[in-house]
Length: 163
Image (cartoon, rainbow, N blue to C red; front, side):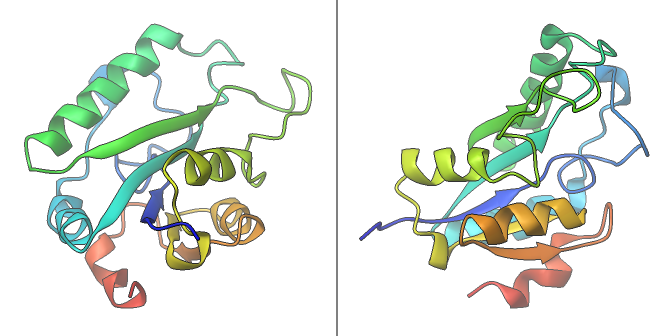
């Protein structure tokens, strides 16, 4: 039996400000500071924090891999400065209109399944917080409880849903 529990997190609209389309520039990447406290609480309660995000803008060539890595560096640094460790950031760089069909793009569950296996996370003790229906569907397909929030909604408002 797997021993760890995890909270999987969508990126845009959950950890950083939703811009309505893709965040293409590091200058436009705004970390949602109101989520520092609730995510620290979840970490302190023993949950691994793992990011699962679709990044189809790469396939569309709206931004580069270097741009994405710079955004993820900014995200990690902001959370680390507040005592929060993001165990990993998984992303799908495909888009159905620009690349062949893949299994990793949400609502597919491959990224979640890979992360759960790598970190020995028990799906039945884990949650996926996202601001799109595809996040909840991906979680459910992997046996993980999905929690749908509004874009940029404070995670503190759904903490009571996590054991």
